[in-house]
Image (cartoon, rainbow, N blue to C red):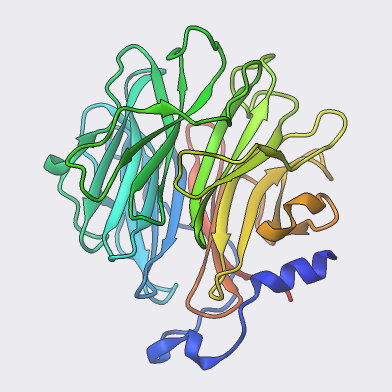
Length: 355
């Protein structure tokens, strides 16, 4: 499939039924600063289009003298709510991931460091995405002395909530970073102890930066794999993308290697996203065509057609790019991190993926 045909899969039709109630029409914009009023570090954005069309962005910021998760939202793309601090613990809170379940409840996961590279996965929920009670936060992982981090949430077809994350030093037989999962079923009162992802972790390479989503009747997981010459994927000179699917979020298909470049090519920060018609795509950052990383996407149905089906996305440089469809067909919200170390900010733009 050509790149143009692939892009067309991401552009929803213009039927008025996709814009109920005459919602505000979103239009492409230039990049703009989102994390206003913050002279220190802002990173790890997560973006969500809620069922009512509201667009939410979470990220971590040091603006309050402590690393915490902040949230802003918009209904029209012009007016954003003031950044609200939604975690307040003395520990460092990073890498928030926000979803809304099929019943309309909002769920947030993140990792909390009690010391550098020592921490746990945490969770909270909200009825409206705007009000969060720090007293209701739940510690998901309980193993001390390890580094549980970069979590992502998904909901299985049976309603089970799943948190996938990376852990180091849990398994004495496997010294590499591995992807784990903890879950909370519809009848569970607490999160279940985390277990390694079945059949998806390499015994000799690091598995990192997972992203999961419920795609039609399954759960799809994408992640980064790289050798042990560097412990972190953004430091390694070469990495690849992998994907697997599961009907329940636990038993996985054999990992599929998506990228196949020769030489030192880096693939980072994968994300699954959908347009208004429910067509799923994979977004990530890659150095395949340039020394500086560029943002690319592929239709999820065409992951076996790399690199022919690649589409370059109209987002600037930086890292940790995340996108979601707006209520306007064909128009997406993109957010990313940009700026010098210690002074990074969150930026955004509205853009079209051309048909």
